[in-house]
Length: 98
Image (cartoon, rainbow, N blue to C red; front, side, top):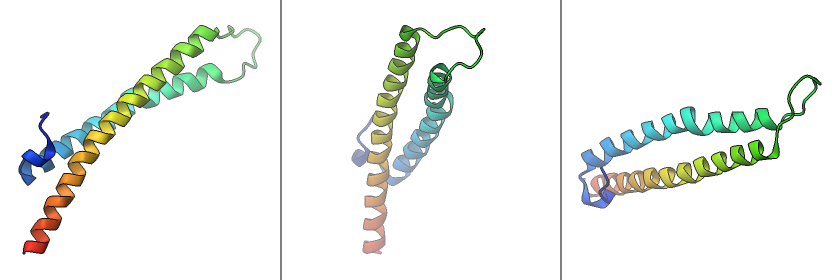
């Protein structure tokens, strides 16, 4: 769904929040962390003389990938936070109203 959280019912917010949390987890596990691990491998000091030297362009490309993935992660996290805040607001209202 791409609706504003405040326009949804609590049930819809919970469903969407759960889906967003799962998608964020999947993105982190399958997208973001592998890119960081790849960058770490590229930037480790080479101890074996037979290992091929890493070119600057390879490192720049890996950094660009990590930065793009980080930006996506931040946007996704912000969207999830909007839903979590709306859920909290609804629950507080329900508890206070009884």
